[in-house]
Length: 221
Image (cartoon, rainbow, N blue to C red; front, side, top):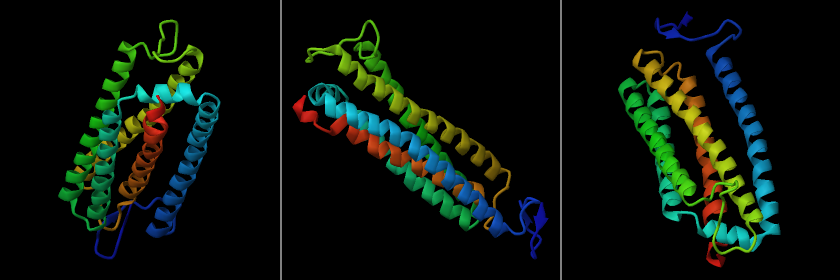
């Protein structure tokens, strides 16, 4: 730890020459991580697109079975959480500790609300026998195999996204505790800034998942 000219404690690690260098390295590291995540999700999106091209009618029927209201609600929840996260980052830049905590808590609540709605939706799919396996059945299609492919990809993509949300909730919880302890100031708020990048990435992934799974060709089903 080091101190600036005003005696303010800064979290400068020994491998860095300055706070600016440390922040740039942290930001670059997060962007590299997000690029790998984009490649990972991109492969899943590509596979989904290929199968949807092979079985357009079945995928349309499967999409029409999805609850678009829940999907749209979750989209709104995440958009609101992006706003509160931006406000938390802005408050961190200004060194407003109470405001940081307020907006981080709001972001955390919205993140938990998203996961709650997703858990409810998954439970409905279990009850409707839309989980791939021996008991799977989707009305309106002649062959159940392609329909199981849709729901396999649905659970894989939304499950992976939910896992990222859980990680994000954990990060937010840590940030709230660290902010309460006075760890962040206007001179050092890199963790809040980096967490904001991660949270926005997770939100953007859902912006792509929502139309792919809930909206495209829905009327054909």
